Length: 128
Image 1: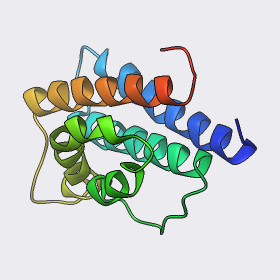
Image 2: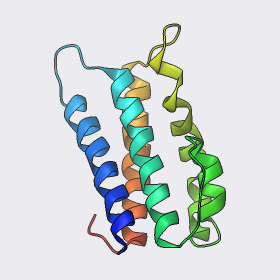
Image 3: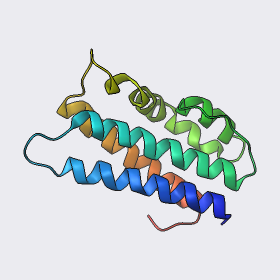
Image 4: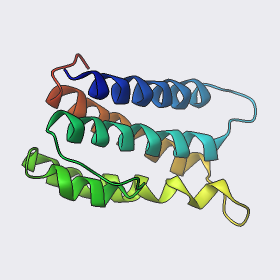
């Protein structure tokens, strides 16, 4: 694995750990944070896979746009388009006043993140 890929994976795992820890909080969990870190984890795994395949990308947070770039290398990821589109909204939506995540959306984001993380780690030859 390329060093830059490993850095992206480490960053993705940091977001995954934050999401998992916050999901375990019993009193006043931060649902916005769970959704944000789920999106960030998926974004960083997409970027890790692109780096490993020598595919350049711009500084974007749109998971579907990143998916489009990765499909030539990982065509089976097409089945994850809906999950990534769902997660993509959390890059910005709940970070500002006006909208907030609820328990249901946080659980859904966590489930979709775990699913994509497993696929990404498999593609990178990492244990899930």
